[in-house]
Structures are given as structure tokens and as C-alpha cells.
Length: 459
Image (cartoon, rainbow, N blue to C red; front, side, top):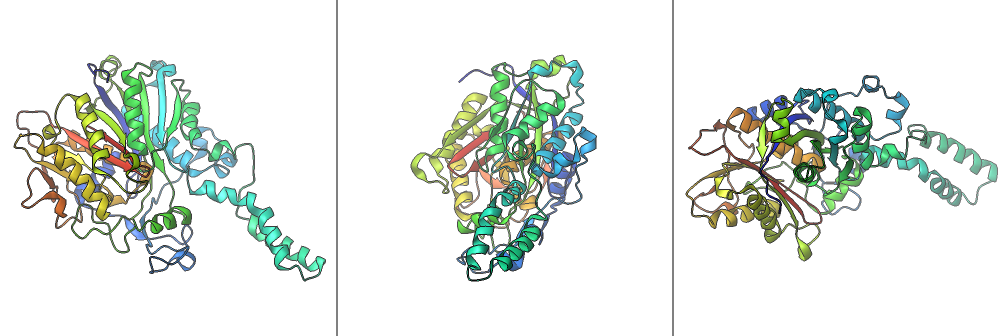
């Protein structure tokens, strides 16, 4: 593991999440305990088609609550993009592009004064977005037509042709035309590529898919690229706009969704509520940031990631998560007991929360330091934003350091049994409080985990 003598620092942030179009709005919502859940919009998940309170009803979801982005629009002319390209591409592309622009503006950097060939983009994403799946319906028309003809095989040819023509017009009307933008506009890698294209960045671009760990993994990969000198500035984060039947019913079949509410780390937690959004940060080596006069929000001395091996595809595992934690603090050069705040994965699933807390507790218990660490989860405010969840957590942690406040985590009233009784080294942040210094630096860490056993941690 390469020594990090020139720390990686955060020099800019941008985000769009439910109820927040900037890091400052996100932070104020966290402090106020605002929550942005609503019934699923009918245009995205029609209740009459897909809802059933029976958890085991085939092809249905028992959860009809989610946190969605409202009052946000993308203006292609601001980016000199033809409107037709917007219509034929997944909205995840445009949300990420907009958020990257906001992060660059937030940094105050003048890109013309920096070597753009040393600025790279790494974006976390899974399945591109729900609009790409809608676009795929156009390619299914031949199958639909064959099904209609088989169903009407006993009817006259003229009648069948008229039905096919009528249904075809209705079926295709809301679907975008297939153009030269359709393929690149619905791939996940071109989310990063489009940002590079728009801002003429030549330092590399790719997408990281670690499921719900994706955006934090992208930030970790960006830190490594900066440490190796491959980039001078990295644009990293994640975007997730997937609240369609494929994803929601898929989650329902794992019984990970809550039929009621999301309660991270609470004894009565029964599952997650989904959300959506995009969070992007700008990172640089500290020496380079100072050279270009960039403002510095926080330093990132440690990061690590691991996998759970044969433990399971969807079930979390303590040892796997501990490996990511140990890698992080070995790189950082200080123990986890020096950390005063952890912004956890905290999905509100019974098993997931208990495994996460157990992994952290075991590592804390290995240190004899008599310290208390607070833990929270922004998912109780904006839902589980999946591939964009880690970026939201990262931004919340950076804002906590910037404002010197331990923020509250909402909807946790009685901690689950993994915290121990009485509460000792790890305690949910029930209320917000001033972050007083005890003679040591303020330190916060962030965790994210994903299907497949993808674990990531950053301090």
C-alpha cells in the first residue's frame, strides 16, 4: 500500500437529492431532520399495476413509498446539447453532467488555468437508469407484434393487421426514436465520458459499478489515481435514477424494502425506502490544491475496499466489512478509535445494520482508547439512493467537518442490540451537537456496501 505523504483533499462538491439541489441545502435538511418520502409517483410506478401488500405476490412490490427529486430540470442549451439528444438518452447522463458542473462551480476553479489532460472523471452507477430500460421497449415491438398475431390467429388477416397497426401506434407513441445517440446515451460509461466531453477533460473517464457501494468506490478509486499521479484533479461521485418496476420489485423480492418506514440502526428497523440522486466531488492532492489556490473542505488520508467472498451475493458479512475498515485505517495512519463520527451505510435492514455495527464495534474493541464515536445515516432523510448513496454520505460527513457539528440521524429511537447495553464506544447520533475538539483533529468516516459483497470505507 503506497504511503500517502501528500494527502488527498476535497476542493469542490455538488449534489441533487430529494429536497436538496446543493450540499448546503442537503446539510440544512439533515440538521432540521427533514424527510422527503412520498407515495410512488404513478408515472414511474403505477400502484394499480405493481402494488400488493402481500410480500410474496408475484411481480409486485409491497412498498409504495420513496424519496424522489422534484423541481429539477435540465436545460440542454446551457450545455450546447441538441434537445433531441436529451430525449434519446437516459436522464442519469444529464443529472450527472449538471451536478458535475455545479461541483466545478463550487470549487471556484478556472479550468482554463489547469492542464485539462490531468483532470479525470470516475462515476459510480448501476444499470444506467430507468429511462434506458424504457428505451429498450422500442426493440421489443417485434415480439409484441408476434404475440398479438398468435393471440388472434383465428381471425382474418385484415382484422389482425388493423389491430397490429392500432396497437403499434399506441405502443410506440411515448417511446423515443432510435438515433445515433441511443446507444451511447444509454450506456453507463458514457455518463463519465459525457462530462469529459463537455468540459474537454483528458485525464481519463470510466464508470464504477459496485451496486450500492458504487459512488464511494468511485471516490476511493479517484483518491488512488491522484496518489499515483495519474490525475491532478478528479471528478468523482455517483448517480442513480432507478425507481422503476425492475428495480423496486427486484428489491421487494429480496424483502429488503420496508412496508412502513426506514429506521436506520433502530431496534424496530424492517427495511429500506428507496431514493434517487447524484453527488459529485472534486478531489486533488493537497500540494496541487494549494498550488492552484483551491479552497479545501477536508482531507482524505485513508480509503479501502473489500469483498465478502463466498458469504453471499445479497447478505452482508462482518469479516468482509472489517477488511475494508482495516485497509482504510492502515493507510490513514490512525486507528478507528480516533474517529468521532461515522456516516454509515445504515439502510434500515435488520441484518445489514447489525452486521455493519458489529464490524465497527469489533474494530473499536481492539483499541483500548476510551472514546465514543457517533454514527448516523442520511438514508433516513432521502432514502437509499443506491449507486449515489455513498456520495450523499460523503458530502454529509464533509459538511459536518466544515461546520464543526455532529449532525443528528433521524428515526432512530432505540438502537439495535449490536450496539450493546449500555451503549459504549459506538452510539447513534440521536441529536445534533457542537463538534468540540479534544486536542486531536476532527475525524469522520463513511461506509458503503453493495450487492455482491462490495464494501468500501473512507476516512
